[in-house]
Amino acid sequence: MVGLIGTAHGVAGVLSNFVFGRLGDRMDRRGLLLFGFALSSLAYLGQYFAADPLSLLGARFFVGFASGIIPATLVAYVYDVKRPLGKFSSYNALGWLVGSTLIILAGWLPTLVFRSAAIEALRAGLERVGSFGVLFIASALFCAAGWFVARRLPSMHVHIDVPLFPARIIARNASVYLSIFLRHLGATAIWAIYPIYILSIGGDLALVGWLHVLNMIAQILVFRTAERSRRLGHPRALITLGLVLSASVFAAFALVHNAYQLLPLQLVVGVSFASLWLGSLKEVLAHNVERSTASGLLNASMSLSNVAGPLLGGLIAHHYGFHATMFAGSAVTVFALALYLIIDRPRTPAPEIAATAPRLSGDVAP
Image 1 (cartoon, rainbow, N blue to C red):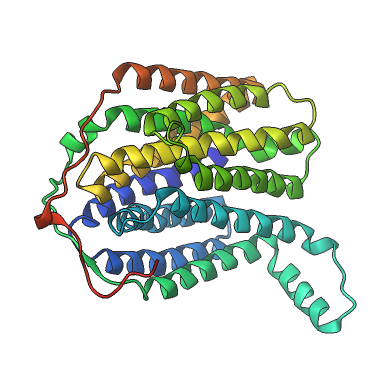
Image 2: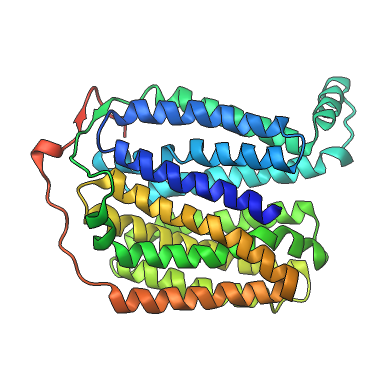
């Protein structure tokens, strides 16, 4: 059931990124972002009301669809106002870092007692809501805050003629889409059972949070520094490094003897994903004028792996154990690296076409 719930989220993400990535090249991107944040706030809150695994599956499908509206449109907006992709991506990792810290705090909530009557009453109230309830409500509030901030963005009206099924864009970027799909297929197979694996080798829920924190710290460092290196900042170098490190660390997960040995490995996970993601983003944005569609397809590739990955990870772990899942994730990533090196070809940068350039209303803050 854990695998099926992850699969539902992935199916919704594929549909959403495919549809709204294209719309991000055909309408006001600011309006699309506002719609995405508002719908996401409702979707995250919906998880709080899930009473059984089946209703949680429906809620996660809604979350996947709603949250898929935002990323492609937002990254195209950032690129077209000429802001650094690494710096922008670091804020994404920072959001994950704050969320992971909330997981730790929610896990500690039942163990704390405060002398202040007011704070203790607040803690007791939050405990009655439950750790998961606190996290679901917090997620909804963060998305509502995102909607409020997005209202201050200038409008960006774009109209690019993108076919309903962008076969040409898919073919042009096939090496990038395939490599990130296969790597993320291996990763999501592992992440589906990763918290259970942590608990099985002596960890607790707080450690699950700390492991995510380390992952995000490493991502932030890479996003903030990679573009400063001419050699390392090249998309092909970043993608290759990300795939090599991913394959290595997935296999290393199976070799640990206790949960705390996973801590340094999470730093490697963070470096691997940040390298792969930044390289992939730079590659598709630089070589496609249909930037929202191209980045939407990149997100859809990851969401597509969310369809099969969690179910695959759950099935392998059920029949062959946790270690087999880790090695399978590593093997799939090695295959992704081989495919990328074989089929990737040099491409010319996308031309700046005045007729399709975004028209901004108002000033854009630095």
